[in-house]
Amino acid sequence: MQRVTLRLFNSLGRRVEDFTPATDGVVRLYSCGPTVYSYAHIGNLRAYTFADTLRRALLWKGLRVEHVINITDVGHAVAEAELGEDKLEVAAARERRSVEEIAAMYTEAFFTDLASLNILPAHHYPRATQYVEQMIAFAERLVERGFTYEIESGLYFDTSKDPTYGQLGLIDVSGQLEGARVEEVPGRQAKTDFALWRAEAPGQLRAMRWNSPWGWGAPGWHLECSVMSMLLLGEHFDIHTGGVDHRQLHHVNEIAQSEAYLGDGQPWVKFWLHNEFLQLGSAKISKSSGHILTVSDLAKQGFHPLAYRLFLLGGHYRAQLEFTLAGLDSAQSTLRRLVRRTSALGELPLVTTADEARAAAGDDAAAVAVIDQIDDAISADLNTPRVLALLQDSLRDQTLSEAGQRAVVAACAAVLGLPFGQLTPADLEQASDLPEVDEAAVEQLVADREAARVARDWARADALRAELTELGIQVTDTADGPTWTRLG
Image 1 (cartoon, rainbow, N blue to C red):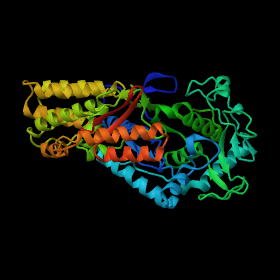
Image 2 (tube, helix red, strand yellow; image 1 turned 120 degrees about the horizontal axis):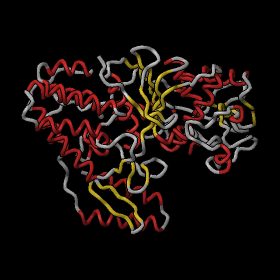
Image 3 (cartoon, helix red, strand yellow; image 1 turned 180 degrees about the vertical axis):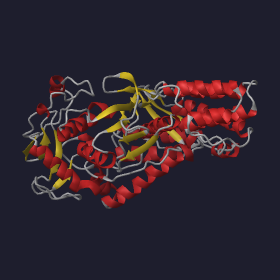
Image 4 (cartoon, rainbow, N blue to C red; image 1 turned 90 degrees about the vertical axis):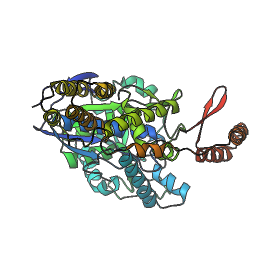
């Protein structure tokens, strides 16, 4: 029986609340998925590690979970703009592949990254291109209900018809009109209004195009998540997750169009959870900023992917986290110690829920007390740093029986997603084997890259950065000039 109520920070209202699913015993969970035009970088993957931790916490509380992660393979314009090219079309032209090849390649890479981080597979991975007809039908209903207008560039949602628009993001709509959305769209009535359907410009022929009542074109990015989530989870569901950058625009627009579509006066989704940014230096890690580093890059340079997961779990999901190689190296050292100690305990019991963990502890009251503390920590808005501290303390605790220690470790593995009992010390030692580096050669490459940047020869600068990455070198540009650090 559940002893402690799971409490989660709801972005809708900015407060911690008791969580109870709408349907007894079943949680319907939607996570905004990737736009598959490039590899997911480590900042992107924080969102999925967080969503996985949430899902494991729900399972720990004895709940069943239906999880959807969408795959955006059309509709996401460059720079989140209303006009302009689709990110996949740009990537296809750059890489001289079809958009289908681009989507397939980067979707598969995304799944590989999830597996390497021990993230539970979602129950559904809907592709946006498979739901365009349903998106058109959704938009037609919004037209019928009077929430739209049509201009040359497409069909737009009229945010003036929604008196609660922006509530999730705590947006002052009058302020947003002047500042947050600066893109000029001819005919758009307000800068908060957003595209439901992006029509082809005169003379344009998109690589991805469908016919609609508003002409040939493609669906808007925000429309996709509303349609796919409702079709797979029901018109209302329990939790929607994503990165904090989605809280101010993408999710605000999802709510507006979904509640207009439903028209029942009820909140579309009751709980909205967002993870904070991963920072590199003073800037967030993002494709647009050029701070690209993938889990595969880390693995090639000697870091086990689960060391990165442990690094993320060492910070609270709602706190900005500074990514440093020293921090990742420390996480890998911690993971090695944990794996050595847990491997010595022998086979662990199979545990998913809190009650199963308590049962596995048997008569060891001290172990049950630790498991209760783990329950308290994960129930307090997913306090993973506290769970990690309890794990390390328990491995040093001489008062616990071996069976009790195994139960505690199994409990921590269940909520943290770190597969103790499966990882071996040898797995991590192989990951720490790094090649030799010629420092003089590295210094020359860094200097050559800086010279290319000064000359504004961006192609050569990018090529030199790629060469440095292949050597296992991360370059960071600072106000005092470039610095470099060896990965691992």
